[in-house]
Image (cartoon, rainbow, N blue to C red):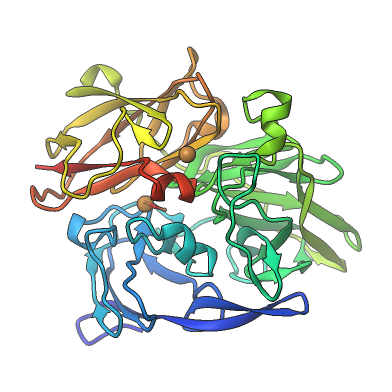
Length: 427
Ligand code: C2O
Ligand code: CU
Ligand code: CU
């Protein structure tokens, strides 16, 4: 809905509810409903207002993951919404088309709030696209989560052997277990969001066919990347275009993967799991889709030599650079308009997923080499393998506020809640 000033207005109410996962109804939380929340969608250049009402019995926050916006609108731990209150952040959409999302971020409680069901997609548009783009027909949002149930409720307890928190054995996609999609076009665009607390997925088709990766966290790649698998750590997104033959059923699945901590270690954090995500049931005749364009976007490379500052962040044992999150400590002060080079290192024997608020970054290096094709687009979250430093570069433009920090943290939500988070201000 647009108001009289042309601003796009959204309403979200976080509330307690219950939801049926494949025959079992369990207590859940949702935005405007039982579980998860509505897809919000806005155009580049629009001013948006979200009226977020907290209908829960405890404080929460709502963070716009991937969004470039002023720190006071970010919805991190410094913008709590008390029970019964409404928070109305407003900002101008000023970034390329992308698949973003929103979720709570209350300090120490994020894992629970997200696991109970508070999350949704926030799609940004930016003019025309030649990609499949009819929402719900050939452009499909997929919020992928793994759930564990125990005795009529969601089981939030951590896996015993892994050190990542809850790993569920039941996949829910948009809150639906055993999901399928009826496809009526020869190409379908899937917007994958890993909204799981801890699980890393390696998405592919069961018959190993190729698909095209067209976008990552912050927007379109320059050119499509043809591959048979894409790994997404918690918080990451990917848009893929899958080709189907008339009448067939194809299965999107998450397969075994190397998580970088050895065969046994990988097993304890879900690396050996094979999980069906979604059946794609193609109609007996399919409407032809336009081919994916060879050129998708222009991405100006940020130059490491222009970086005003280099910083190192070592993540280990629920700390970053040896310090646990402290709401009253600022860990980095960035000068507005400058570019910074951050080197992220995982010194733990467990996978981590590093997320930075406010900006989209570019990956400069993974280990000693340049980024692989799937890491050449805009990113806000990146998987950190043990002992393989990832160098990223970002420009911190437009917004400054010496009094309100943004966060950087591990998006494995247990890790974040237990202290693997830091704060930066832009001045
Ligand atoms: Cu998606 Cu700071 O979070
Ligand atoms: Cu974020
Ligand atoms: Cu972590």
